[in-house]
Image 1 (tube, rainbow, N blue to C red):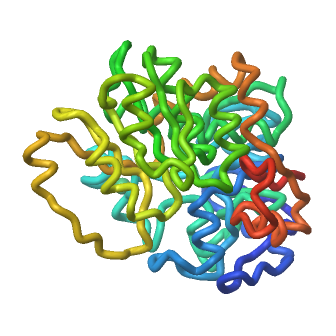
Image 2 (image 1 turned 180 degrees about the vertical axis):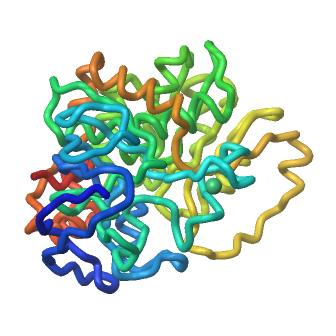
Length: 360
Ligand SMILES: [Zn+2]
């Protein structure tokens, strides 16, 4: 048996928008270990769970899946020393079910969720989210060591960098010289930009709303060839054509819950191009003209999470690319997790908002 040996302070989401400071008693486990959490970034999925906008979410839970920490307690199932700074891939996979063997993100043996930050805290040993002093390291979790040379909140950007690499490079099989349009300038959209450029994209455009101006400004600093405020310039195709003279090979929907982006992606991509859909639409049905997929001979892929290879790419990037420092703009202590959620949701304003982390 492996035991943490003392209670852990946690923020439990008991119901939508209700975060309660709670002491979680130590619960021994058969195998695995405990991560002393240093920082947890808040993603769009965390905000949706906080708002109560995800039908599959069961409360209570401890939010947070973009975690960085140090191994505090462990057994032989964890192949790194105590004290090693690591990130954990958010999805826990059994490796044996048909979905795991196909390399999909969702494991059919874990219900209602196999993702840290979405597993109910009623499931022992309760510490399944990053908004707590400690996180349970499931023996099936995939762990990556990360550099000690950056602040913990910056290290959380490994998670968005990894998704950016999977969505912008791996899934569309991006080749050097191709052109990529990213719809949505959040942390993962910015990570798509960095990953596409690193893979040799000759042109990358990023779109956003008027309140995203600081994120769009950062996109320009990170090398975007054009940024488009779609509220001021609704003729996106015209702006793209003026910038590059052709239609992008790949369009990625990384918007926050914007159904319109799906239509834009099909419309804007070149014939024979690839569309990556990485954003859910709150279970709403979309009525669209599917002939566009046929007549333009498009390849459309749905994207959830990041691959293990992309985590390896992202941990190297974190250690070598100083621009990653800019990807996290706000940090709050655990006691102010409610304000952190409000900030991530844009309820405290969008000025200078890139990404929000809770730090310890
Ligand atoms: Zn599985």
